[in-house]
Amino acid sequence: MERYGFNAFAFAGELDLNRLAAKLGMVRKYRWEEPMKLNPVTFSPADAGDGEQVYLYYFGGVVFINCSGDIIARFLDGIPAYADNLKGQPQLPYREEYRLEIDPGRETAITNDCAVMPRYNLAFMDIICFVIAKSVALERIEERIDVVFDEVEVLIANLGKGSMELPDRDMARLASSILSFKFTSIAHIMVLDKPDITWDNPEADRLYLTMASLFELNQRYQEIKHKSETLLDMTDVFTSLSHARRSARLEWIIIILIAIEIVLYLLEMYRGR
Image (cartoon, rainbow, N blue to C red):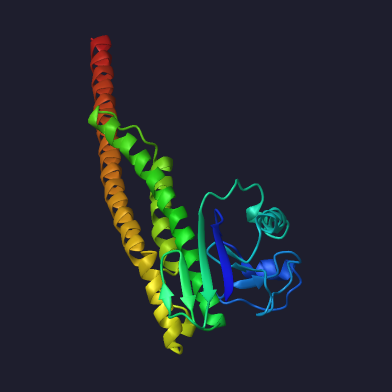
C-alpha cells in the first residue's frame, strides 16, 4: 500500500507564477488555473514520480506532498526570496491536511480526511491538491470578512448612539475590501470551476465532486457571497447617511452665510443713517 500526505497552506495574497517562474529560471508560461509543481528542496520543476513535491497556485494556495515539517519550514523561509509579496509575512494560520492511500485490495472510499483508491493516478494528486488549496484560501477570506463584520458592528453600535463619524476614505476602503472578497472568491480561487481533467476522466470527476462536497466549497462560497452582499447593503446605508449629513452641513453653512449677509446689510443701512 502506498500513502501520500498532503499539507495545504494559504499565503496572505496571490502569487504571480509567471514572474516566480522567471526568477527560478523556468522558461514557460502558466495558465490561471495551472499550478506550479516544484521540488521543495531544490526549487526546481518537479517530475511526476518525485516523492516530495509542492504545488503553488495563483490564488495563494500552497500544498506540500510527502514533506516533513522541516522541509515545509525551509521552503516557506526560502520562497520569499523569489516572491516579493511574500516577504515579511507572518506565520500561516490557515492549514489543511489530507491523506491518499493506494491499496488494490480495498474499494474506493473518500472521506473528509482520507481517500482510498485501488490504483495510482496523477489526476487524483492534482485534484486533492486543488480542493484543499481552495479550502484554505476560502478560510483566509472567511476570517478577513469576519473582521470586516466586526468593524461594521462597531459602526452600527455608534450609529445607535447617534454618532456617524466615518471619513469618506474609510468608507471607500471598506467598500473596496468587501468587493475584493467577492472578486477573489470567484476569479482567484475559482470556487465554481472544475479542473479540466474532470471532463475526460469520470473517476477524477467523481473524486472532485465528492471532495468539493465534503469540504463544502460551494456552500462556503455562497456564504461569503451572502455576507459580501449584506456588507455592501450596509455600506450603501452608511454612504447615504454620510451624504445626508454632508448635505445638512452645507445647508446650515448656506443659512449661516445668508444670515451674516443680512446682518452686514442691516449694519450698513444703520451706519448710513
